[in-house]
Amino acid sequence: MTALSQDTRSYERDEITVADSSALSRTIAGTAIGNFTEWYDFGVYSYIVPILSTVFFPDSGIADIATFAGLAISFLVRPIGGIFWGILGDRIGRKGVLAFTVLMMAVGTFALGVLPGYAAIGVAAPILLFAARAVQGFSTGGEYVGAMTFLVEHSPDRRRGHLTSFLPVGTLSGYVLGSLLVIGLQWGLTHDQMVAWGWRIPFLLAAPLGIAGLYLRMRLEETPAYEAQDEEERELGGRALLEETVYKQWRPLLICAGLVLSFNVTNYMLTGYMPTYFSEKLKLGENTGLVIITVIMVLLGISVTFLGRLSDRIGRKPLMYTGSILLVVAALPAFWLILQGGAAAVFFGSVIVGAMLVCFMSTEPSVLPTLFPTHVRYGATSIGYNISVSLFGGTTPLITAALVDGTGDLMMPAYVLAVAGVIGLVAVWFTPEPAGEPLKGSGPTVASEAEARALAAE
Image 1 (spheres, rainbow, N blue to C red):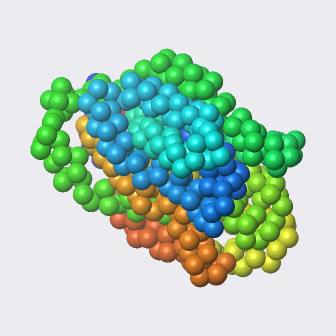
Image 2 (image 1 turned 120 degrees about the horizontal axis):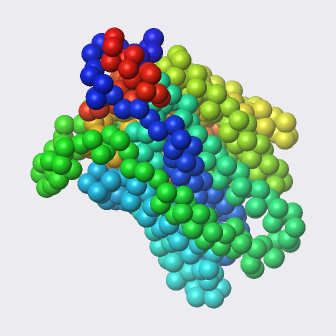
């Protein structure tokens, strides 16, 4: 194993899995496409909150908060989707579930683009908006965790950090594409044109994304870890399933929820709330804030795989500790700098928040599924991940907007980030270091037959 590995067991050759190197690139593309689709939708929705407020909540004093509630609804239903898809993925396999979730996500996003506005059908318009967001959230509940689980179970132990860090590349690419489309539309169209029909275009483009995602995922192969299970483990039901997935996993579930909280509060603060914060509170030009966040997303996309590779060498926990410490000590200075005003100050303050985020983004995909054994990995990770995202991550824009509006304190986002950092420090402390270790319930996974023979001979 690696210098980080604490595994001292001896293994027979048939206990060691050799990863299919020819299929890894296909596996990475097939899993990342779902993250791309999810975050394309999220980026578009977040960037056009002021437009959606006008279309669906006209003449309302809380229009922005109501529109953020539409974003929050998709996260509130995520635990339901996570439990459903996660348990189904542990019973019938990861591949089939992932094929369905990416298609359902695209349908939910496309539906937003064809909804009539408040002027056409009155109060039914925001109700339908919330319904479409609920469909998107239900499918997303099984998406990111499924992609993490699938890629973790395909990756060699020594390269798991690097390979799974390509999932955030899909995330960031989707967000950047969504933001560039919105920026282009707002530059090319008048405000009235955007309100009338321009806002629909990015959502309608989700249809071809869903078709492409379905095609890529139908070409994937089921994971070796899932196929190696005993049939009895796949057929658990009722009380036995609940006991195996929740009762016996309470400690890693709490760790998972704490790690996800620190990651996603930072994530949705930067990507979900700050574009509106810049335009509504700091009075930056509408596109200026969007360009700043987009540039930061590009920088994160460039750096995230390098940090993923670094985590294979030094471990995941040092990077997660770095992100948590930055949240505690640097959130206030970052927002002090942002509040000085001007594009340069806002950019450099936001870069500090981006540095906090990339420490989690590059490591957590390779950490969270490793907390659980194979027969409950998808379901348990989905429960811990989605409950935490729903309660703390996806609601961050809504809660932060309400706190800022209620108190008038523009430093409120920094206080929220600092609290998330403290929780992150506690969660990382209790997290076992997974770098270089076999997955729970499985033997080692290596990159070549020669490595397998060498390991068996040790």
